[in-house]
Image (cartoon, rainbow, N blue to C red; front, side):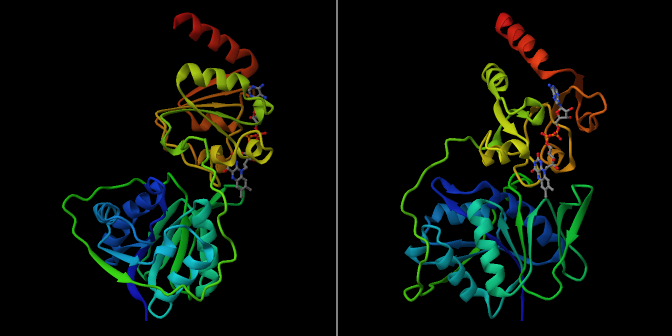
Length: 324
Ligand SMILES: Cc1cc2nc3c(=O)[nH]c(=O)nc-3n(C[C@H](O)[C@H](O)[C@H](O)COP(=O)(O)OP(=O)(O)OC[C@H]3O[C@@H](n4cnc5c(N)ncnc54)[C@H](O)[C@@H]3O)c2cc1C
């Protein structure tokens, strides 16, 4: 038996919850209206009531609370055991998890434990008439959007790229809370957090102005950083730069990085592959500079400039400093 429900894993962090969890609830509300499935927020640990209220206010019809203090800190072993024990005999039709580091870790292990399929890093979600979840991911170098469904296993699982969907607050929404107290005393925790390092990198998905550098920068972000300071902008990079360690992975824009909703995105020395452009499609205004007048990036921007960034940027910086 399956429950006609869509479950959204609510990932907790130091300041409350990860934005992506609320973004998925926003999309989940839409899917629930179409399919008639109930939308459930799954929270683990012993959260404050205001967090439960927040989840309901963002669309959940019900909160499933896995109540145990051992779940206040993420641990693969505890979380996989607690969630799979809770749902294995009566799984929901759909389970969605934010594609954060911990979310990816949890989703893969959980899908294995529940013997079901998992789509990674979806950027579109729909439910067809037969109740199949279709999770869209760019494929074949981004030339197509593959919609992947899971015919047999339940729940149908997908991780969802942060920044892809919009949060929606639902006014005066009421929701119930179901509590389940998992017994984790016999579970061996194979990985334990011994030290916590908080990343100093700002959240790109909230950046209003972003300057994104690609291979055309030759891995030197000095000019971009100077300009970013003048524009009060954040820096992002394409995947090759993140792969080479020029910038941390949290700054990668694109299908396996982050999606931006910036008011202005300045894209410098980037060729415009689909894997990259899917990360800037929701930006309000995109300005691109590339030395190659036939660059594909010019099909994905509002303003284009053919030029060498090592010539254009110093002049731009000089002009901005003069007019300041
Ligand atoms: C499964 C998968 C997932 C992927 N996910 C991502 C992702 O999330 N994000 C991502 O970015 N990529 C991703 N990629 C890689 C992606 O397909 C491209 O290879 C990548 O985006 C190319 O990066 P780029 O534009 O910086 O480099 P290039 O393709 O090398 O382009 C460099 C550009 O700079 C221009 N240029 C060179 N010198 C100058 C100069 N002096 N001034 C101005 N312009 C100059 C060139 O004309 C060119 O257009 C993924 C690939 C796969 C297979």
